[in-house]
Length: 109
Image: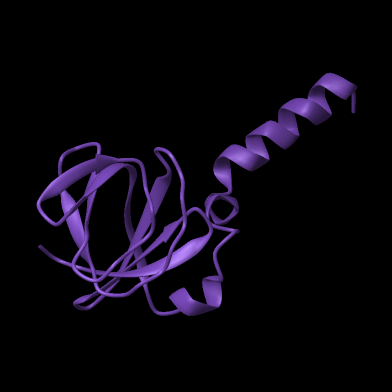
């Protein structure tokens, strides 16, 4: 196999392997959950103030996505990232998201 063919094959393997996208999260915590969607985080709302970026979760903080939908944090964990991709998993009424290598417990607005 030529060098170009190996490179193309490796790129295709990366693009079609969805597990790589959330490999930074402990997937054992998501057993029983179904990947519902993925979205980019555009900011958050806390104390009636909208801010850009992602700074993890505080209880009742609303995580806002690019499509202007949101989910409410039901746990606390700090992580900073600008415009990270969120992978949202559901199991019944339970919602968890993998964002920047951490798993967050979320709920509806």
